[in-house]
Length: 150
Image (cartoon, rainbow, N blue to C red; front, side, top):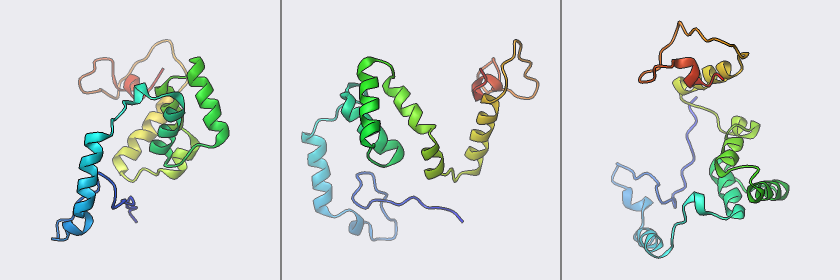
């Protein structure tokens, strides 16, 4: 059974229907509101967000929820003190157990690729790599390196 992502009909990038009912999903007031929003509300790039908004935005985008108070405080402090970068915060959430459980991969090929990457990352360190079974298109150092072998 294929899981379909829930689509918020008020979302800015909600898909339009092709069955002649597109006006039902995009009422005139909504289009006008989004045009006004884009025109008058400044968009701040992720790299310029203050620590509090960085943590909240990262949680919202990756885990689709607000951070707990303890996590908010921990990551805010870590960002301010330079112990973690914005990308490090995003990476820790992407690879969290919660993300793995709540965001299943529905594409079979992507699932196989992610599984191979995890397998390769878990391999013991070696002093020499002989990559006999894989190439990476456009990269001469081979597939093992680009799958995450360190």
